[in-house]
Image (cartoon, rainbow, N blue to C red; front, side, top):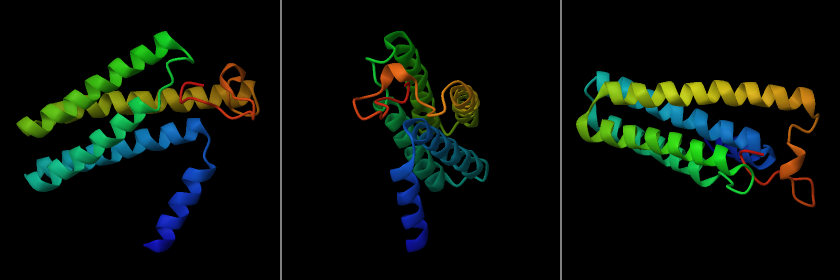
Length: 145
């Protein structure tokens, strides 16, 4: 367990902002999927715990958005993630598989879009970071950068 924690810590500390955002989205998907499976098995405690974790990762995705980078895009992403968050809350309150499915579809679509964006950035800029959103040290300041 300690080795896994050290590996994860090293992975997070060396990840680019783009990779960090992807890790957060993948964690939200993983926990929402666990909640879906638990709800199908009528394990309500595990469902609640997994949905709570998924919501935490969605909230982290929202908080990592930098409005200065691309205000219109960030507003849309915030709205999208707020919708996902609300679906996860409602799924928890109502024990509703459909609501979890709604959230998962959006998160998975976002993940695929984010992967495509990363590939596009890699082919257009070897650093993988849009030059308009870097600080004086060449580090990205945003998930959207």
